[in-house]
Amino acid sequence: MKHLFQRIKHWLSLLSFKTGVIVLSLCVPCYIISFAQMALPISAATKSILWVVFFGLAKTFQYGGLTILGAEGVKRVKSYFKRKKKESI
Image (cartoon, rainbow, N blue to C red; front, side):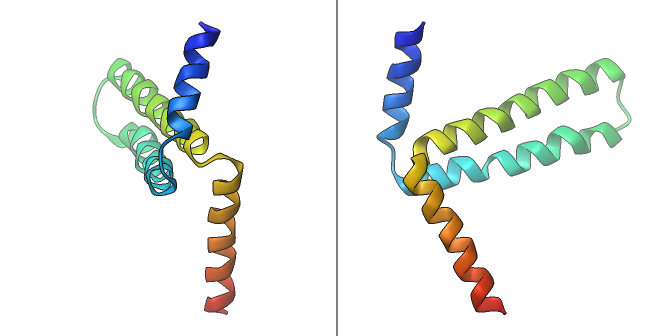
């Protein structure tokens, strides 16, 4: 099992920076859907299932995107937002 996770991690690290940003940004709509569906007039069991599915997808996108980006990619994303914040001031 450990070997499988290492192979998946290696495969994800081979993907591009742009792909990592896209995958990481996909977690935002999943988080929104996972909590917004609570306002729908459906049964509690259905709400629970939807929450587990969309929250799980959000976490998968989040950790997958971070794995694709790596430490240097996270630094690039942070510097991008810091630069945008300085430009807006």
